[in-house]
Amino acid sequence: MSGVRVLVGTRKGAFVLTSDAKRDHWNVSGPHFGGWEIYHVKGSAADPNRLYASQSTGWFGQLIQRSNDGGATWEPAGNKFVYDGEPGPHKWYDGTPHPWEFKRVWHLEPSLTDPDTVYAGVEDAALFRSGDGGQTWHELPGLRTHESGPSWQPGAGGLCLHTVLLDPAHAGRIYVAISAAGVFRTDDDGQTWRPMNRGLRSEFIPEPTAEVGHCVHRIAMHRSRPDVLFMQKHWDVMRSDDAGESWQEVSGNLPSDFGFVVDVHAHEPDTIYVVPIKSDSEHYPPDGKLRVYRSRAGGHEWEALTKGLPQRDCYVNVLRDAMAVDALDSCGVYFGTTGGQVYASADAGDTWAPIVRDLPAVVSVEVQTLP
Amino acid sequence: MIRVVLPAHLRTLAKTDDEVTLDVEGPVTQQSILDALEASYPMLRGTLRDHVTKRRRPFVRFFACEEDLSNESPDAPLPDAVATGAEPFLVIGAIAGG
Image (cartoon, rainbow over all chains, first blue to last red; front, top):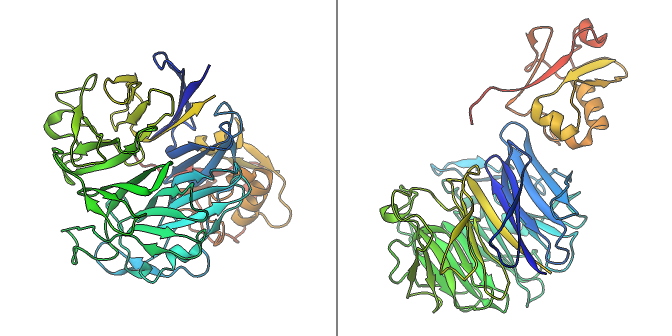
């Protein structure tokens, strides 16, 4: 019988939540790496038992952990992330030059076809790749050395490369998103990159329609239609129908178009999900009501999904990597909160229930659909 | 034989419950101890000092014989009591909240 494995990264460890396809009874395993910040845990599409986890603390730096048995046991992999060449400066918050310094891995994206190949999006922003299961890491320097690189400035969370999307249809095409530089795309497997931010408007930067400098929080695609992208920006929910060449706003009737997550239904490429957050200075849901918003039209028209979610006195946040979907016939949707809850819906968002309520603050949620 | 006491997180990472003992060839310095430690426990590489510059991570401190050695030269000889194993070399995570 098929099942689901939910991989949860928190401020104080990783947790693995498993269920059969009914998704009504859950086994909770963890904390793994207790006391460490786990920014991201993700499994290989080519080998579901191969997992990678990003483990860090301010004291002891970055570690990468690898599992070959679906998270039952782990072994440290390589943690040497060294920029290619002399990295030079980017801009600091006040506009002054600041040296490029490796801080942590925000996101691990395993190859779609090879369990030993995995990409790492890091802070300060750069993309690394390992071809040996995480033992050694090599930067793809064409991104960081893009001519706009010296102008990149950090968002509130740092100058982080937080999203990596591998295009399943176009060999060598990868999208990344950087706060606060924006979206970049390569079509030659990471050698050269182009900014993909036309149509974005950010009122809080000196040139609101600049080619680079936008605080993109998250982008998502559906595997069957990879030229269509959805974006949750610092403000605004956006859509691209031309592989990122241009973007249109689809915020529509959302109560707030600020937020962090965006994701796509596993079987309906135009059904998308966001969690509106009140503002950039008030990182909690509007009106104290935790609501997922679903659009079945690829944006513009949104419906609030509230059944099973707290509708009063709720002031948690949902961070950018903390939503995912499963691929069962009735698509499951999952998200985690800074209050330590992981909510699941086995009916595409119509109803929700917490899998767990009292974890440390959730940083990331990924889902594997198991055969 | 050199004795090294690691902070809890690194004992877990190194899969050791107690203090670590090391054989160090030549002069006993911070660098020679850390070289030997990382050779015996490669999973600790990068957690105490930078992979490339070998500079101590900012929130890591080194103590021995009730002295803070954190800002001493990595090549400076350590006290005889450390070199003989009478006293341990202490790796401490700086006290900070969170």
